[in-house]
Structures are given as structure tokens and as C-alpha cells.
Length: 114
Image (cartoon, rainbow, N blue to C red; front, side, top):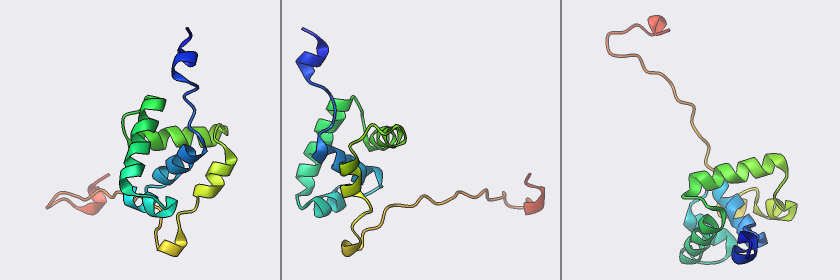
């Protein structure tokens, strides 16, 4: 028996793709649950099943997996459309990463920190 026959296609279904897209935006489990109209417990169960299906360990790997698939067009476009942007009605915004700055050590001049 082939591995594909034994374990299935290992491709997320449409609901899983929608959840992946929301998690990849940086939303927390309870925010994802609110948008999907379910509970945080259900979201955690879905994530566990998705991690197992895709061979991933955490949401960072999941976000990177999602980003790579978006660039190569491997995800179902309807799932991407349904999941973005984050729900403005709920006041939920995607997490934005702050640019880090280098802070000079005490006594060190900012201009000489090249």
C-alpha cells in the first residue's frame, strides 16, 4: 500500500485552509474562533490535525508553509478570499511586526555605532 493511499492526500480541505490563512495573519486562537463562529477548543483541535497532516510542529512553521504556498499558487483561491482581511467588524487587525532598532551601549555615541 502506498503512503498516499494509507494516509490520504495530506492536503488541507477548504475549512482548514481558511483557518491556516487566519493563523498566518497572526491572529490568536480565540480571534480565529470568533471569526469562524466556533470555540477556541475547536480551533486548537483543527490546528493539531493540520500540524499532523502537514508534518509541522507549530504556528510559525504553519505560517511559513502558508506563505510559501501563496507565492506559488498552491492554495485554493476561495479559501484565501474568505480568510482575508481579518474581520474589521470585530476590531481585529493582523499583527504587524515592528522593525527592530539597535540601541547603543551606555557611553557609546550613536554616530560611532556603525
